[in-house]
Amino acid sequence: MKVHIADCPLGAKCEELKVEGGKPALYRCPWYIQVHGVDPNTGQENRTWGCAIAWMPTLMINTANEARKGAAATESFRNEMVKQGAETQQALLLTAQRALLQGGGKVWK
Image (tube, rainbow, N blue to C red):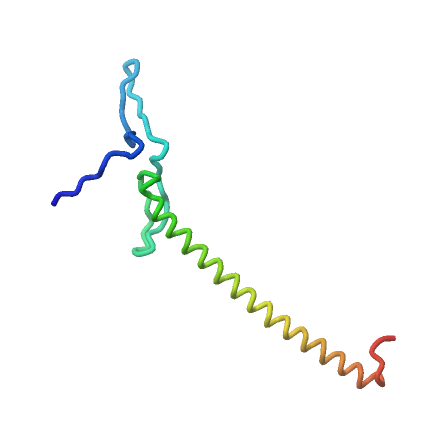
């Protein structure tokens, strides 16, 4: 079975060359965009023209992946802050205990 690309659901052509006043004029659909990026499967850089409507599923998947990476980075940062907070608390507790032992029970003057 042969597969054909259907016409635009908005009723437009992606690019159409017309002659106006004896000069060629290129009419381009505002939804026809060039997407720059790196293919995550091959690692190769792409610059591909296509309909923004057709790009939506791919861009939504990419957005979800980036959000997942951001959430993981935030969780990692939070874990590091909790660890440092516990270390700081231990250092302050040790300092206070030493001050109590050396100062005869007086922490504050």
